[in-house]
Structure formats: structure tokens, C-alpha cells
Image (cartoon, rainbow, N blue to C red; front, side, top):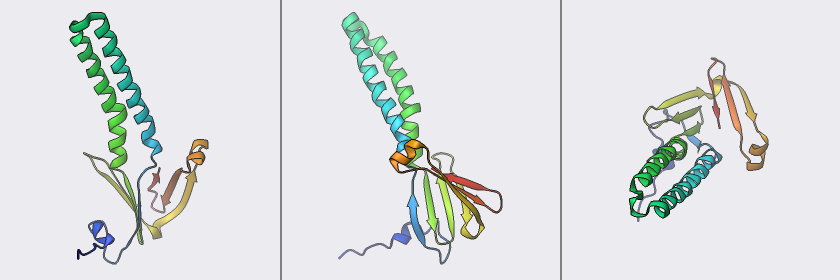
Length: 150
């Protein structure tokens, strides 16, 4: 019978001695919806662009099709792939002693606030945030540093 791993072992490198992981969050999925919509529009637009040039020029339409594909790839990388990768690599950790953020792919950014240094906690919800049951949590510390959990 296979031994079941302790869920705390997964986060052992983040935890201090005696600390327990309470829960882990990532930003709400609404942050990638716009990028996915842009991606769908760009792919459909490129397909229409390529088929229009092919109808007009026939087999000689390879250069306009490649130009359209190049532009589509640049737009997809900037407005679709980048937000999805940022979303995947952003996590918020809540432990018994502190709140931590980790974000970034190439350049990692981290922030930790011990729970005993938290001075204020605020939340913000716009209209669509209320509809989607999400919002922003703003945590301030007594040292003046804080962060926002989207």
C-alpha cells in the first residue's frame, strides 16, 4: 500500500519550525478571462485574414498569411499567454504565523507579514466583483509595508 504524503511536506521549504499551512490561494480566474477573450478574437481574426488573402491571391498568399500569423503571435503572447502565466505563478499563502505572497516567473517577488504585525485589513468589491463573488483584500502592517491580495 502506498504511503500518503503529509500535505505540510509540500510547503516545507516555506514554513518555519512549528508553523502550519492554513490555506493557499491564487488570484481569481476573472484576471485571465479578458486574455482568453482576446486570444479567441485574435485566432478568429487571423483565420479570417488568411482565408481572405487566400481567396484573393490563391497560392501566392503565403507572405500576407505569415505577416498575419506573426502579428497574431505577438498579440497572443502579450495579451493572452502573459496574463495566464502570471496568474499561474502568483500564490498567496496563509499560515499559522504569517501571510506570504509569491509571484513572478523569471523575477520572483515575495512578501511576508507576520500575523502579529498586521494592523489593518480592508477589502474592496466593485459591482462585477460582487457578482463573481471575489474582491481585493488589502493587508497593512505596523511597519508600513503591506500588500493586496486580488
